[in-house]
Length: 380
Ligand SMILES: *Cc1c(COP(=O)(O)O)cnc(C)c1O
Image 1 (cartoon, rainbow, N blue to C red):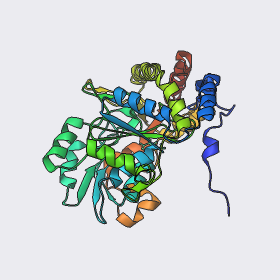
Image 2: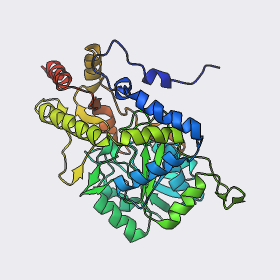
Image 3: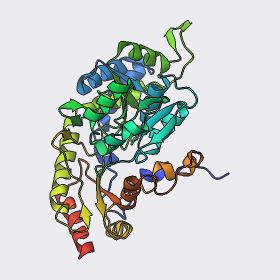
């Protein structure tokens, strides 16, 4: 059978493109410093939940402003374990958006839940005004996705969560350092983060974090990520193995020192794009809110003749991408829920028109100007 692995392709820097989304080689140029720390780990040997994981969790919780942070295997596992800890029963529902990455929905389903979709707004995030109508006696969680590191309308979502006593599981995988009215994303419930190589804070493989304030939830999830063991000989619950590797914690600790720079660069680059692309007829920049500090995991605008623009830019060496062309409710895996074209008009229109440009910390002003001038040229 043909091998089903398309991932290595994603990390190739092609010579064909001059302006790339991929910046990993540049980002880890100082890898010898990380190697030194890994050498120490090899001498000590605490490969699983070692001292560097403790250090990481402490720093991460401080950064997000929660009582606890738990290192887990991936962002998907952060979502899955959080949902699993709510003991979903067959038929239980989780409200979320169809405009997200597959992992959000995969986590709901593998945790035993059924996703109930509500449409998004023009800012690509869940329309909080539609949530209440989707609540049933089976609703066990509300799962807002802070798309591209831009906050959902948390005042409204928190109010609904309190009114119905339904917990919030935040997909903050794009949102490290992002804020809503001065409060960090990932601090409103179960705050789930990813450290996948293509995320703002990234490690050398997979890693994830759950941020929380509640003592009982913290205890339960600490057990769930480590076989349910309270000590070597005592298993309190049958559970999973989803720990943040000590080796990845070393990489994460190293990068945490640069997260301020990474975040500020992305914001400055995005602001420059906003200012310039906002002037181009054919491009629609979403309205930005003063209440929200967005961190631009990806930079997404809407474009007329989107597919043509993507080909045009690509042929001129610019890595324009589509995150993502097909919404979750229209995926083959979603067939059994009976959704159809037209169910979520904003999501569907967004999927047909969004385009993303690189805004990471290694994009130069000149490169941005080139992207802008090529887009202008296209619409002439
Ligand atoms: C990346 C991502 C995830 C999953 O994170 P992994 O660490 O890759 O498992 C979940 N949700 C969103 C929105 C993501 O972009």
